[in-house]
Image 1 (cartoon, one colour):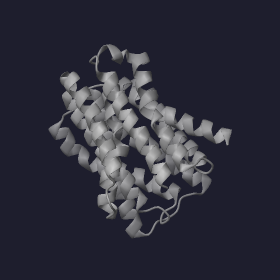
Image 2: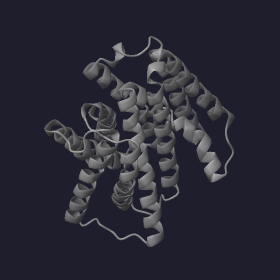
Image 3: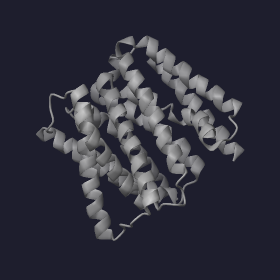
Image 4: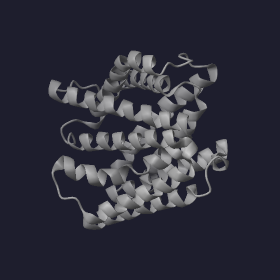
Length: 288
């Protein structure tokens, strides 16, 4: 059990590290995500072929999984866009509201009753975002894009829940990321026309960060997370996931000194969001 906890926290720490890498890579958010998906998808097809884990999904499920992958690619696009327009701390703080947005959107999707407590937790999180927003108006665009990333990741999570038990985790991961890569590739000409990038090819340093982002922070974290899921309870996982923005922001403070770029009330806003997330997880666990 102790090994599973270490695997879980290692995966969460590496997820928190993705924001720091996103700022280190000099590519615009569009090409950053495209190259990340390209490296990850090619690597996964090779690995899964070697492990003989490639399965052919029914067309119905394959199209659904690929479509969810396209939404995932848009989430990454917004997440790294938030980092480029603001910074790592703002992007991760906005992402920390995803669990609370799901408490409202999930009942609407599955046609269940919205719980008053969860709405109150959502208002707490929005109050925290408001404090950060008005104290950091110079990065307001990054806040908008970060909240869009949060809503998109909630959409991916809800749609994935509808496929639980129908598609194996390996197949979902492989075809979802492949669908995201194909979808983003089709979108790139339009995105490039609207938001032309100055740089399309990674620098030598970018290649290093991209391979770390793709292999370590995507493939390795997936394997660690799946292994931890087999032994750790859902409550422990959900509570542990609240540490992702904390790890990421701590790394951003240490690596880029982002604490010097943020307003004096950022900490209060972030603590309010974090408190709402923890209370939501604890309340959900007690109900279950």
